[in-house]
Image (cartoon, rainbow, N blue to C red):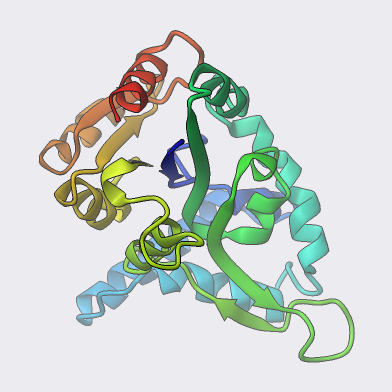
Amino acid sequence: MKKIALVFDADNTLMRGYHPSAILEKRGIDVNEFWKKVTSLQDKEKAKGESNVEIVYLAMLMHEIRYGKLKGLTIKELKETGKEIDKILYKGLPEFFDKLRKNNEDKHISYNIVSVGIKPLLEGSSLAKYMDRIFGYTFFDDLTEGEGIDEIKSTSSTAEKIPAIVSISYGKGIEEFEYPIKEMIYFGDGETDRPAFKFVKKRNGIAICVYDPDKQGAKEYAMKLKEDVNYILPADYTEGSELWNTVNEIIKKL
């Protein structure tokens, strides 16, 4: 049976907006103000010549955990809050995953998320039960007494998306890759996905850039990535949509 891996970015690819906002809102943090501060600090770091500015968001999060309104945050609370992500999923999700498998029963389809986000939050959402692997930020909670988060355990930056893709491709293979990249479909939405788009497309896999059809300027933004992807499609995962039909056609051709 042919094995195919579908790999998804999370924010603005499977859902509208940023899923870490769920825990910020729950703890009474002004979400808009938080992301404004992140953007402002990222701009300052870029001006200093720093390239990996995604770490700014993680640093701000850890600052809130140590000194702010996220103090005492636990991994359990993150997973419980992950249920809130279901409210911002794009149309057709999460039903898309089961329906796609049923429509392609002659193929073995593996679903995976590679996100510059928070793994425990994603694990608490309805997406998790469909995924073979989820890559995202993780935390230690056993360095001190109590259940509170102590420190960062692992990161998942833009640069780290490619090693994650390779890991998914390798799978449980011993002598060869279980899911060759030429039989992989990568879904993303923006600049943080550009390296992954290029990596997959160059190796004859399929790169799909999705955009929010209800957001003004989203398609125009996506078109800036047209040289690095195979398709640019509205983020509508319902059966019969343009995305649905395109993905099924790709799978049948593989």
